[in-house]
Image (cartoon, rainbow, N blue to C red; front, side, top):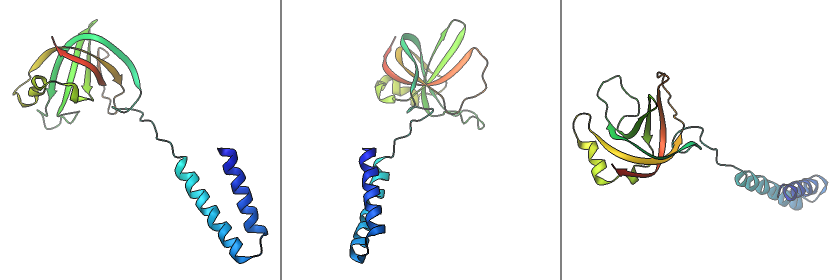
Length: 156
């Protein structure tokens, strides 16, 4: 495709420069502008997200047991991924917390966490693809927070 485009650029530009007829030069110039416009529109690539729910998966989690919660803003200074469902597990002396990207997989019973008062959790089994966090925080080394696109979640 690139060779054809370069060939067309060359011949239309040559026609504009060498042709003394005003109409032919004008038509060739318009063709060149159209060619440049369509080439540039067609060559735009969708940029991959470096982080967040649309980024590449950095790991995959197989069926693990954990807890599902809904994070609300309890303190005025807390603006870290509030009003989102979180799922987490505790393993090997470490805490793994994941902010759920695809809440559509949650059942109505799980979604009821949103309207519950206090810090209510449900025991669940889940699996999914882990993605990078866009707003990382300074956590102790035994705490990790990432995004997750769930492939499966069920009450335990």
